[in-house]
Length: 240
Ligand code: PEP
Image 1 (cartoon, protein in one colour):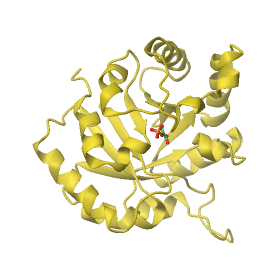
Image 2 (cartoon, helix red, strand yellow):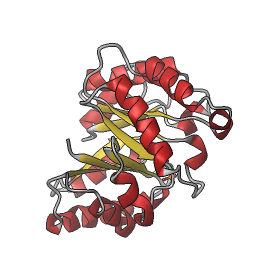
Image 3 (cartoon, protein in one colour):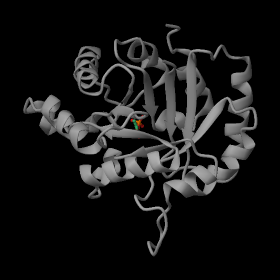
Image 4 (cartoon, helix red, strand yellow):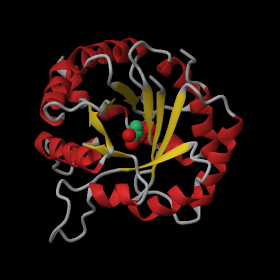
């Protein structure tokens, strides 16, 4: 199982950043990368150009969201099929920033099903708030999210465990907490699903996080905007 290093650019970037991604793609040529898979999920308008520009294909391109339906009168929406047509291979679904805007587990599950229909791999995000953790409910919350967000009989998907309080805050979960939550998730999804950790992953903490049992990669927000940081994180993945 290759370690997945996935960058989520959120609503950052501009057309010119495509060049950064292409440079990173070439940089990986000289990197030992048998054991890793590198993915960047830019905003929708940059997906096609990033796919074309990263011609060496050492990075894969993904999206940050999709609509559940293939086509129709849904102004402003983008279908999983359109993303696949533009070169995307993955799509993030159920990110906590979208859940905070009202997305429910059933919506996330429908989007993950749309991803399968289009031949994309969904990265299904789950994670507890600080309040839920402090109340001792982290495991139950994440378990309920997984049960509600992973479609029945789903096979080729990735789970990203992202404690909400660790996203974009600089606060990282303790390694012991990451280990325990990932073991819990492993028990729910089985051995063949990659489980990523997300929440303030940086070059300085990546090796410890990626070296933790049942951590099969990272979903990286802020640090993925800097290609040197993303590359350092990719290089710190253990060679299993
Ligand atoms: C994220 O957006 O999924 C994320 C983990 O962000 P950051 O790395 O900035 O905490």
